[in-house]
Image 1 (cartoon, rainbow, N blue to C red):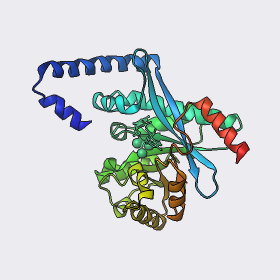
Image 2 (tube, rainbow, N blue to C red):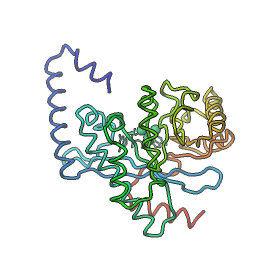
Image 3 (tube, rainbow, N blue to C red):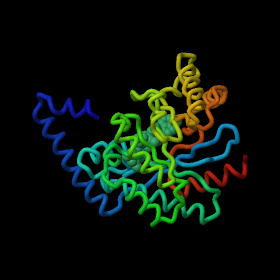
Image 4 (tube, rainbow, N blue to C red):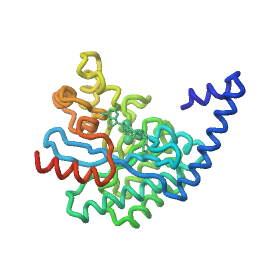
Length: 280
Ligand code: C2E
Ligand code: MG
Ligand code: MG
Ligand code: MG
């Protein structure tokens, strides 16, 4: 979104600039209300083990049911909440809702599953993040070992701070994964310094996997080094059989993507899961 902000800032067309600024203000006040009125919902997308075929977890992805504009994907409002700080409140709502859902599923007899939640940079930098998450876990009754926090490579650029923050999170007993892996600047070697559990290979490397370019080699390199570093690996954005096959051959253990299902509301996920268990 920085490119877009840049464009607005230097646009020579004033009316357009004003419209952009007004839209932004409107969206910002809508967001404040949305948090109070709980217009947000979570969609869930499964992570599947490629050897056993078992669903090992789900990722919680936030959506906004905007009263006028309909269902908005996170790309249309998360960047703004990161800029104005509302992400702290929204992020806490997401964490709470995801943990409560996981607990409800476990109580209803579904097998235990990991619950992955995305953290934003601003949350990661928040004072007392670990304490807040601890409270949220306690309030929900979800055992900490089922929570997986997704961070991005960019959050590890301040190495000292990241190492300290991550170890305070690990002390809670949660799992840590690096999301969109391969798109940032961190080397696998630098990751050795952090207490992380998993790499999620960015979907850009999975997209053209069957086209025979360099992506297969990149994925092979990631899975080989991840094994050495004792990290799990999930491939994101898997859409077809061919990709699944190639990922298996490259010893990637988990996959997530439209191939299984798009992110769906909790009740639809339950149906999907039960149907899958019956037919598998
Ligand atoms: P992400 O964490 O990398 O999540 C995966 C995104 O890829 C999701 O987009 C998902 O719908 C999409 N996806 C999954 N499988 C496929 C596939 O097979 N093909 C394609 N083309 N796309 C696939 P979504 O839900 O729009 O979320 C976009 C991003 O917004 C997320 O990327 C995450 O970085 C952010 N986000 C979502 N929810 C939250 C949240 O609660 N908090 C924060 N801080 N960020 C969030
Ligand atoms: Mg993610
Ligand atoms: Mg993410
Ligand atoms: Mg990702």
